[in-house]
Image (cartoon, rainbow, N blue to C red; front, side):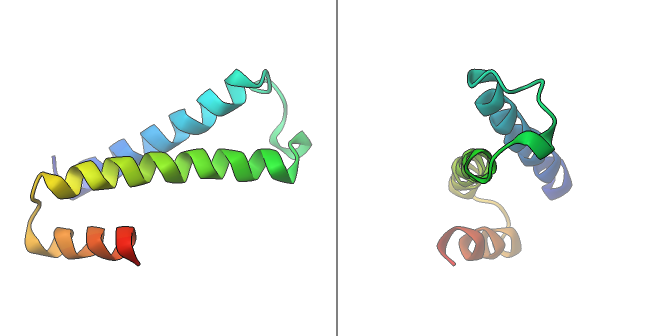
Amino acid sequence: MSPDEWQAHVTTQAALAMGRWLEARGRLDRPIATLTRKDLECMASNAISRFIVLASERRTRGPDPEELAALDLLLMG
């Protein structure tokens, strides 16, 4: 999977994680403006967690050195 394809995949997975969080709380049909700050923080946390899992998996598959360095920077700061 190319870096662009991977980025699209990760974006989709993060959106799905946010949707699952909303759906589990019965808030999928609410306008985003009605969500509390805590709701938004939880959605963001789920999306970030999903990204970390996917990036960690991608890193273990041995991407090219440039991508490996970028993933290391994202994952380890």
